[in-house]
Length: 166
Image (tube, rainbow, N blue to C red; front, side):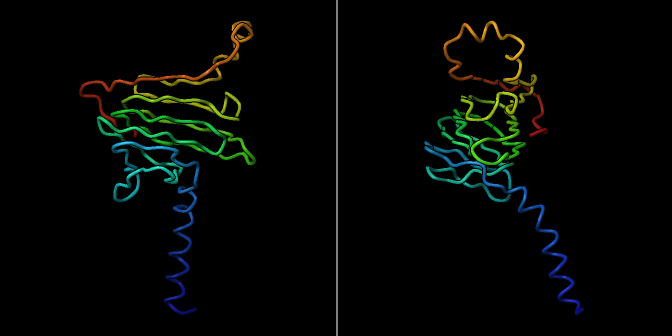
């Protein structure tokens, strides 16, 4: 086997993990002002119909906002000054996901769960984690609620706190 074929085969093998990390997970329904994906390479401005990928880090400026719809119909509304990473996304097939973790560094976020079970969703903040599965321990409360509409979260970054986990 020639040296060039070995190099090409090695490069192809190394690119497989990169392709797996770039799995499409949804699409931007709407975007206003400036929301960018700053995760990989040069910043990519998010506009309506932009594809959203696993590991995207969405960062909005002071007037930026975007509405993202994931494969399972989960809606994520990125608010002004938000810094959010789609950190862990495992697709189950069909119209559900097995696992979704959002890491929220700061800013405003509105999260509306989709077709997947509540245990599939996790939101991590610098102050702790939020999981919809906690409601399973309180079935009597859930029975009294006609609808669990949405969870709105506002995370304020701590002054001097590092955001290195993003």
